[in-house]
Image 1: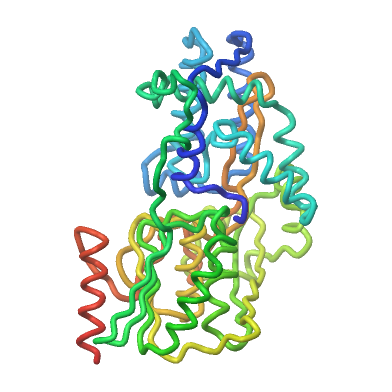
Image 2: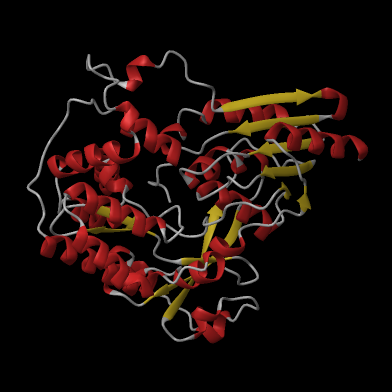
Length: 411
């Protein structure tokens, strides 16, 4: 998930477009719009793993709604109306990694994958897929997206001043606190954004070096909706271990051509269902349409680190998602830390979403390509991570305060 942007960053970048940038494309015909939806529908049907979860959790049988979406498209009289139907259809999937963000912030995705290819050739299919459209078409759909969902911003930039230029102060991503009275070191990390991995590295090292002097360590990721797994893999865990940790990832995926294109490594060492057979696996994984993969991620200590000897708590809430959820999963799977707070938002076991470019409109969609499993076999996107210690609260501050009170009683 190293290239995934988080929602807050996405909106920040999208808002930086000037209101005067109005690229246009020809109005799509009804046939073209229908062809694009059929293309999207077939791509999802072949590769998307979460239709069963959507039925169970949200009572939405997405595949059965095909005629409903097509009938709506046939009534659409503009590109804007067509785009809105596509977005609403994606929203009906109820998955935070399935959306049109590669279109809305095309340059961020394209430049990110383009740079990654130099070091990781596996990302070339992503670049190739993004190059099936272009910046002119993506800029046009960005404008449509703004008209539909952010109309109040359309006239805010008459002098071509971007939102970035009007920001005078950016809140710190990391907040640290050392509470000597209960020997507790606490760090609150608000985002694992890809752009912050290097920027925050020094401050986190400094914090963890000092934290070794305290009996309790709180890693607070409340409100953190993800970004890059490398953020915590590189900047956090290595400072509090003295030996390499290997933890497992297990996921199921469909035997589709798109998966073979974007994730060829998945097909090199597949595992049969009988050899996985975890107790709480979703029923759809048992019908023969899924293959399985198990791999291990290694986290090595830094050359100067030592093992933290105190109590480690990972504080989470229902906004923890994607790569921050991956940290919660890691802590549960390895018993590295006690997870405390409330149930997370899940979908943290897997890799970068797949991409599909609609042939007529050039709209680029991303969607999850594998079903990550918890250690008991349940789908991480469905059951999320349930904390070891439940802390009910009305706010992040109250939940944090209750954890500190809990630690105080354990002195």
